[in-house]
Length: 105
Image (cartoon, rainbow, N blue to C red):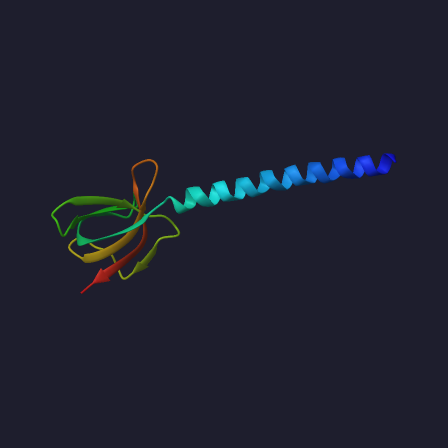
């Protein structure tokens, strides 16, 4: 008699624990999915290897600044005057984190 009651309680605790873990996983996936990847094409106007930043003047004449990290992939060498395409995500701190940077010919 006592073991059945304990068994039901254990199942309830495990069920609640699984529900919490599932919600935490989906909440994390939702925040990652909310980061939209965008693309921009333009000419590099400023480049700083020391601060891991560069800016481009896009096709509409707007200046867009980017930062990069160890996960950023470069297809070629970025330098002032190079025409590039940048795939990036906007960060919570209003920075544009470059995901990939490709040199255009």
